[in-house]
Length: 309
View 1 (spheres, rainbow, N blue to C red):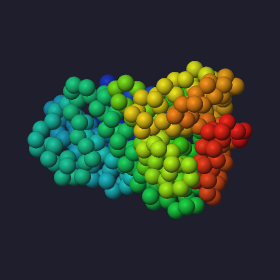
View 2: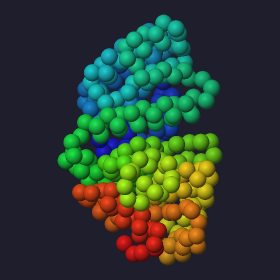
View 3: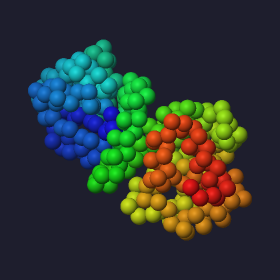
View 4: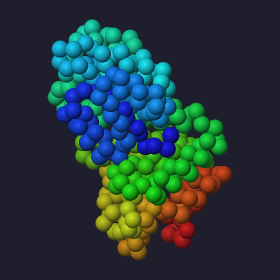
């Protein structure tokens, strides 16, 4: 589960496969490609439990060929128990659409119009669903092991896009493992900005009950160097534009923070917004804590009163 999203693409059109790969690898997702039904079946048999999304081309034998991609839907359902299957095609018919949904497909996308934007959104939503299902299947010991595994991958991953995606996955898992903060959404796009993490504040105790914000916001910067005042000011500005419903934010930076970051934060001490810095040591403590709500409370107190961690 510690992968931030593993996609199997089954398609015989090399141009479209290249487009898929580019789209999703830039998002930090892991991509496996199969160019035929046989290769797709082999990949499903090998990788099934690891997969989050299966993208199937409806026709795997060219424009005039049969809808052989649809034949893989049932196999994907049985061999990839957590994955959501999405059919993509440039040759949609009413019969093919009806058959795909009868077989249990999650979604069906036609290659036209704003195709790239639509498929990014559909895959993102599907991964959210599979992530919820995987987490629900884990016992407490499994969640702790998953957190540790993901944190380990964050620290050793060399690919920039994948490293950032892993950090988002870690933060999402941490909130979902913390009572009162289980409702988490990642990578929202409101056409003005992309939002890393949004958490519904459902806590019944501690500072969160009286925090006055319906949602908490998270920003992830998985840099090797510390984040400075420019990063702080950019995040602070984002918190002031959400109708006062998300004025508390967590700034996750395993690389740490410069003194200029903290100085810029102190300039806004009289404002209603609160930025809570979270570095690598804070993440370690949160991961290992028996009482994660208490750790969040300590982080909130430290940020509000500018005390040292």
